[in-house]
Image (cartoon, rainbow, N blue to C red; front, side, top):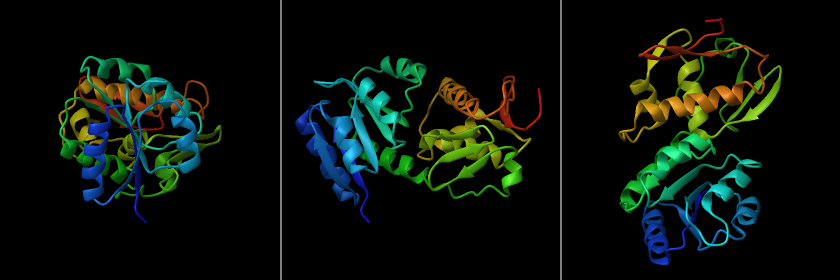
Length: 230
């Protein structure tokens, strides 16, 4: 079944160009030129991925992302014309899966779309449920369960957790984690990984007993997954 990409972009020529490149790559596309009604559209049509401009008439991308994350883990790639917005977006912890700065190459956007969608089906399995300690991971739904309940992760959060639980007790450098969650080999800063880890820890705390930590920082090196106290 052809995966459908929703493009929410008020620059209609740019939206049409992206749609052409995505169609050439084998995707189906829909375009919206305003934020008004976008949340309802996503709820009704369940696209495979959303390309979401930050600055939109009607409702901006920040509010759309917040509202969509209340009911869906659909991958979201946010676009912005201001490079300085990226750090702010990461700090807000909105749950977007990726960010692209304008002006960008349509080919780069297609590569980012493919990379995010690939992360929905990680090739490396968890060897055994016990390896993940108290956690049970569901690759199909991107959900994580523990005695305290269940959470829905974004594709990038899930890929990060999978990379860590696949090697319990082993230290993974930030560079290695970047390779696991950004398989298009882009250059991102250590701060990006740290931000994703911070958000992942916050989500896991929702289903773990108070004070229980599974993702441990190793000073100046990286992170490890281990069900022991630091």
